[in-house]
Structure formats: structure tokens, C-alpha cells
Image (cartoon, rainbow, N blue to C red; front, side, top):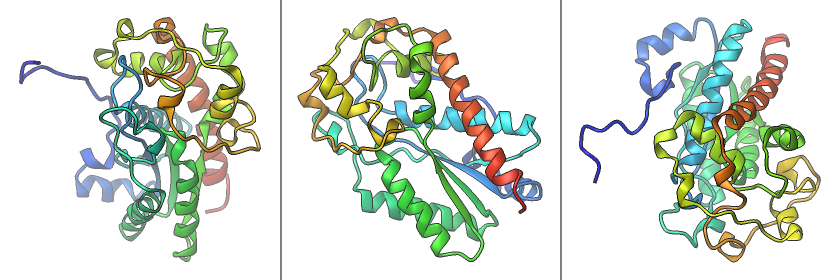
Length: 275
């Protein structure tokens, strides 16, 4: 049992809205009405990663993107990360929490509409868990439908990263959920919570992998959606790939690709266009 005064991890600035006062938010609204909303999950990622991996990644991706955009003269704010998502296919593993797609759509819509009432107008939904993408798209459309002037987009950075994954990671085999890439990114931000020594390499049949995260899958930038029944059917551990290959340098490379793409898209769509 950890000591009650032990630090689990350190969170870097900028703060999310949850760490800001109302007065600070109102002051910030004078310079931006754009908010990044990280959408994560609580689900098993193997014995070496915390269940909150997707939420932590989503928050860090938004944090780094906000820093980059600030440097580019495009100020934004970051909403608190949503810690739950549609994780039904991970329910074979203890600790996983899943909510229905209808619940997620309603939750995201109500978060955005609350922020809209407070003065925000531009909403950028950014996933930490790609299983949330379809619900995020529906929520974004509903926000636009229900307001006269809000803008809402969903940014799937996984497509951009998948296109260059072979230049980022060292594995020559299929890496996926909780594998080398994801473990490397958590080593960068939450090394205290990562234990690659607990994990074993586990690669799956290439045809099965193709339908989970192959280039044809829409979440990786392709044109086909494959529903997933259960990760327990393809991995007894909860992860796919070789987490023992993870290194912080690989994680930094991955984050760089993600942030480069996101910051370029957000600048183009919310700052280079007439507002």
C-alpha cells in the first residue's frame, strides 16, 4: 500500500478549466472562445499501464496542443478530460468502465452546451480513446444543430500517427492497444504509473489486427468500420504488441506527430478563417 503522502504523478501547465477559477476563465474568454475537449476512457491496457491511460493521453495531447497554439498566436483553453467512454469490448477485463454511445453523446453535448452558455463558441473534441469517435461526431453535430453560431469539430489524430507509425516505433510487428507506442507516450508523462516489466509481448494474427487497427479501419484513416466484440478473445493480457520496447524517446516522437497535425488543423479551421 502506498503512503498517504506519496505523489502519484505531476501535472504540467497549462491548467484545464477544472484548475482555473471562474474569474480566470472570464479573463481568458477575452482572448479566446475556443476550447479543446479531451475524451478519454477507463479501460484495461494490460498489466503494465493504468486504466486511465486514454484519459491521461487525451489530456496531455490537448495540453501540448494548447502550448503549441499559444506559441503560434492562437490561444485556446482546455476542458477537463472526460474519463469514461464506450469501452464495451474491454469489459472482459476487471476495472473497465463503459457507458453507452447514447450516454456519451448526451454527456458531450451537455458539456459543450454548458460551456456555450458560459461564452465559448468553438469546440474541438479530441479523443484519447478511438472507440469514442462515432459518438463524438454525433455530439459535435448536435451542438451545431442546437446553436445559432457554435462551431464543433472532431479531430482524429490517430489517422495522422498511423501513417508514420513505422518511422516512430521500433517494432516491426503489429503494435496496438497498450503496445509500444501507447506505453512510450505514458512513459513520457506518467512514468510512475508504467510497469513494462510486468508485460509480455503479445502479437495477434495479422488479419485480426487488420480489423482492429489496420490501415483500412476508419479510425486509422481508412474507409471501413469493423465492430469489435471482445479484446479478451484476441489477447489474454489486455494489450496488443510489445510494451517492453517502449522508450520515452518513442513517446516524444509520437506526441510530436500528433501535436503538429492537431495544431495545424485547429489553426486553419478556427484562426485562419473569418470569425
